[in-house]
Amino acid sequence: MVDGIFDSHAHYDDKAFDPDRDTVLRSLAGAGVRRVMNVGSDMESSRSGIGLGRIYPFLWSSVGIHPASAGEATEENLSLLAELSQEPKVMAIGEIGLDYHYDDSCPREVQLLAFERQLQLARELDLPVIIHSREAANDTMALLKKYRPRGIVHCFSGSLEMAKEVLKLDMYIGFTGVLTFKNARKAVEVAAYAPADRLLLETDCPYMAPEPLRGRRCDSTMLPYTLEKLAAIKGLSPEEMASITFRNACTVYGIAD
Ligand code: NI
Image (cartoon, rainbow, N blue to C red; front, side, top):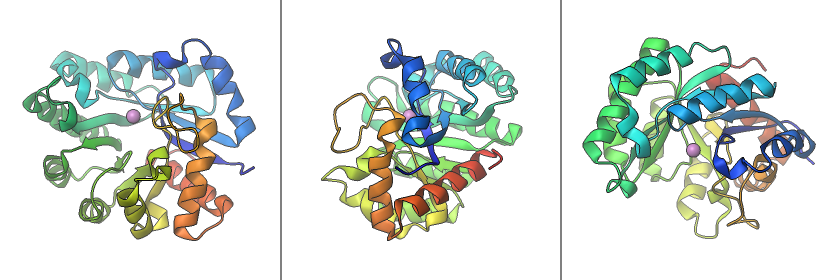
């Protein structure tokens, strides 16, 4: 077993964990998972993530409004986010971004405004960002180039061209269990191209369980499958890959090693 894995993107506040959240979180160290970034997706989950950070010493959190909830990004809530970001274990603004796969549930102009306002907030607060971008590469890159934030494009699903632009901005690229899927050709190509010191491992749990557990509720104990795949792509041992991605996550989030 590889010890010392950092799950750089998880949603333990999600209701999928209501029946057994504490049991799952206490089992992570036994699977070699030593640190977790719990990522906020709306006002309520941002607050819950801070609560989890108070209970579990190995868990940090981010606060932010996901494009699916972009309607929540009122000026009042943005000030509340700025306040929440002052909590000691809040290390990033996210997840924020654009999701045009779901633009019927939240119109693009609402998403664009919420994204831009949160990029401004991250700049004012000098915090890194966690970016969600799905079927919205052009608009995402235009705003990233305008604000040039530090941070991560998570669950990377873009093209190699987009990855090159993200790397030019000195941002990191996060891979989930999708990397292990049989049809993951694009993600594999990006992982092979990107330098190891720009890569992050993440579950995005409770979603995106890796093969051979695809379809099940995901948690960080499944991350070793994604780790093995990424290590194989980079020609490194799983131990080396775990240690590199652990360090990368600590660097981008500003957490001491
Ligand atoms: Ni997520």
